[in-house]
Amino acid sequence: MQKLILASSSPYRAELLRRIACDFGQQSPDIDESPLAGENPDDLVLRLARQKAQKVAEQNSHSWVIASDQVACLGSEILGKPGSHQAAVQQLTQFSGQCLEFKTSLCLLNAATQWMQCDQVDTRVKFRQLEAHEIEAYLLKEQPYDCAGSFKCEGLGINLFESVQSNDPTALVGLPLISLCSMMRKAGIFSI
Image (cartoon, rainbow, N blue to C red; front, side):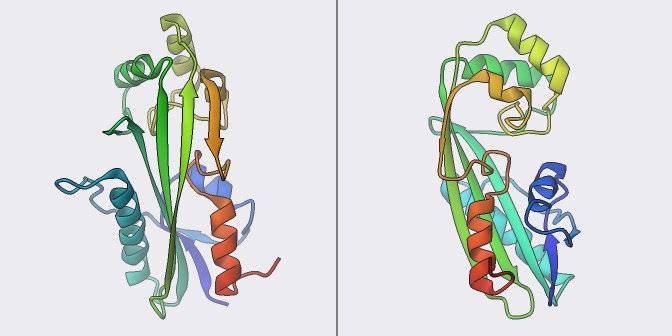
């Protein structure tokens, strides 16, 4: 069987993939993730997942490559990872009482044949009204500065929400496992 490689350095995606595959490699694709001029969020996340998969496939020609990307949107504005405490405070303050949409793309690529499957799962998150002291306490405790939306829904970040709507609960963490399992069955990687 061909080796399975996760095209990501994300520990969150790797943790999710371990739920369904215990034997896989992990490699950072190291691509430019900047949006193209006029590119909408749907096109952006799908393009980035495909590019990540293709980049890792170039160095692993006999592997199955799994790649994913995620963007958070408030209305038509694409939001990045905060990167710092101050930026995370600004994001969560802006999100208070608002609905955000998280677009999570997925790509499974057979590097040997270039056969590719892609999908996108959207998740709608309604934030509750957040007080400044709650935002500070949360950020100091979890420090989600490398996470789109400034939270970790698999941790205390779930306390920031009023509701979550999605067809795949793992999409919000960054790797839609329901879609991935379907792709892997279609590819013959596993058959349960």
